[in-house]
Image (cartoon, rainbow over all chains, first blue to last red; front, side, top):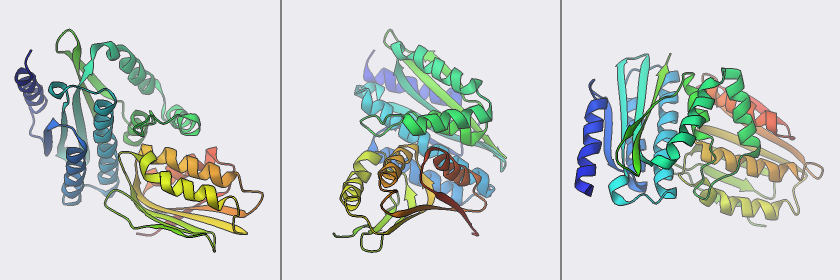
Length: 185
Length: 125
């Protein structure tokens, strides 16, 4: 499959995810510059909307984790250019709910371990999640690019909702991973 | 020894570490992609400070946002300060917007895993 076909594919996935109009969308290469661009644009967007402070802060916090997770994953896995694109979307139908969606290519060999990790996080009550987070904070190791494995847990903890996910088949080597979290009042 | 001061940027906090007074401050946003790289020079400076600390050491943390990558660097910094708890009167002050429950909970998370006192200080916006 050529890189151009790959590019088309991510657009197709993005359009499926945008049945409802997104209030913010980024579809393209994920590198240091675009990571900064998305974070600053979302900060600006959220500060000009009427969301309650609590939701606005949580949404910005989660945006930072989601976008930096995308970047770190691609950096650590040396994704080839055709697989280094990602999707970041914000949907909101009212001032009391923000939905953040991200998407990226992932090696198929990594799907099961990621699925298990999300299932574990989703199985926790909020108290268990807080306890798990503290344990990771206390003893967790930092990867060479600064990730501590805390990102997902932090997102689940701050949103107060379960992580929604889906893996789409791409080819023999890659899957496409879609991550969704709802932030509500 | 020299003080360690670094201006804030849209993604990194103000760092103001005064060796002579033992008054340290981290304020603003700490959301760099790579916190290890960002905090390494500060942690090296703290390694020197702990060899001959002031009689009292107070670290004020006044953050609007921080990412999980930064939180691990904070733990590393706090651990270095824990090691000198018998040589200096040490305290961490964790300031947070009184409406920001997440920032308060973050302070509580650090309180749980630290062996030095961390005071939670709500601030009216």
